[in-house]
Length: 129
Image (tube, rainbow, N blue to C red; front, side):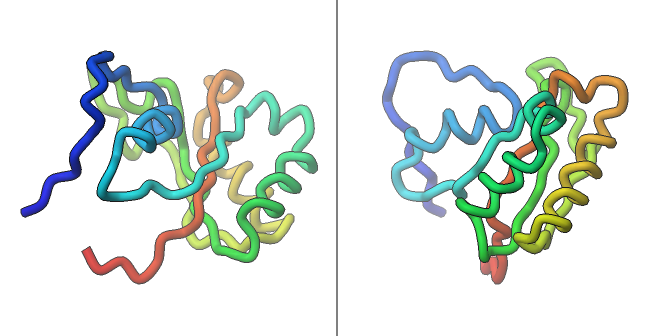
């Protein structure tokens, strides 16, 4: 079995949201790669969803997407809330489908949505391992 070597940077690793943790891991992984991602703060989405959709489409289209929860209370050092919030996979890179997926994920945050974010990545398909 091959392990994924990480950087020997002596700074301790700090976990954040799912999106923040993936962004922090990306430069430390040397034999693998992590998917491209866009982090969309819920506050930014609510302020101007059209701009957010435009940014997602311009960077990710024509790929299908995974619109994933990325909550500050999803996974912490103290406990896991894995599966507590909604994610939508197989999202087409269209205005309507992105808006529908984003609203679904944000709605799953309930009253805590304002301070959360949504992680948008290309849909990984045909995975072998």
